[in-house]
Image (cartoon, rainbow, N blue to C red; front, side, top):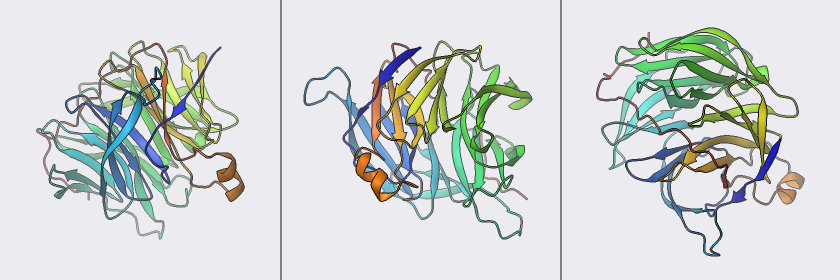
Length: 309
């Protein structure tokens, strides 16, 4: 088992930092602070102390009216964000345009979008959850040229998504199950099938995840203070220690996609825990010796405004 350690970066701690993604065209990092309703942008820069790991220089922050579960770049140069129960296009000027919204059951359960990312063909997959994590209250949706459709129902906390380098497998974490599952994925139709367990967790729950260029799956483990990397056969071979217990997500960033960026949270930590974890809520970086896969932007050029019924 290989053990690595992540180093904190310059941006101030957030409440629930999540969803890091590298925008190759702009050479910048995007991430969100979910409960603060923020989309953040930053650049990877050399550290002032000359260390081998880069730092993250915060650039701009955009505040939206609602929780922001995730953000992704699009092919036309704008952003798509999962805001409360809507998917919103955000332009360079900050102008917002709704692309899709959820028609939710009248059961009194408050829901929101959580993690989201794009499949290898540019379709957006976005999951939901209840604010109080009511079991089975969430779903996994897909936004494509034909609008928004449900892929999975009875989800509790829809989290990490990623695809094998050839796009034939989809990895998915419903955190409440305590495991990451794997599906066969039909790229032509964007349909997952054949769900089966891939990796189980104890001492923490799986949150966001990413897949590298060699097919390894890197999983942020909430409550455990680390990221675990699994080979395609499910064997854990690397642990990245993070000096913050609530690790939320991971992504490969930088021109060579060789820097692992890790997000963390301060939410649900006690005052004593916050005192002990002075870097909680920050972004961290680590070098793993393996490069990631390029981010696939949302194919908004093929998508039309849609609303679910």
